[in-house]
Length: 112
Image (cartoon, rainbow, N blue to C red; front, side, top):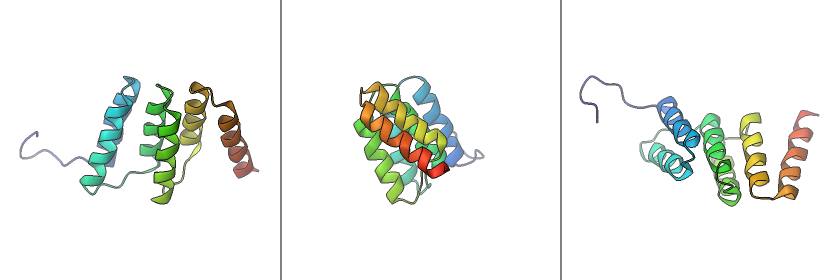
């Protein structure tokens, strides 16, 4: 890509680029980047999850956000506050108020 002498991309590089896709309301581009990370043997982290879920919330892709959450949890990446807020936003954008309430209750239970 950039030639010799340039560092190889890492988790932070992918997360930053996926975040740019999220801000541009391009969730499919963010998802491709996450797939590219895995193909390059770069392990997605909790920030990756938050960025991806945030990207999905821009388009009300709540089903896709839930599937991604499940995939990440199986891969031992647990959601943090940012990721949980993003999944709630995805549900809200998709008019899934009961699902949003469910995640809020889970968040409240984890705090208390």
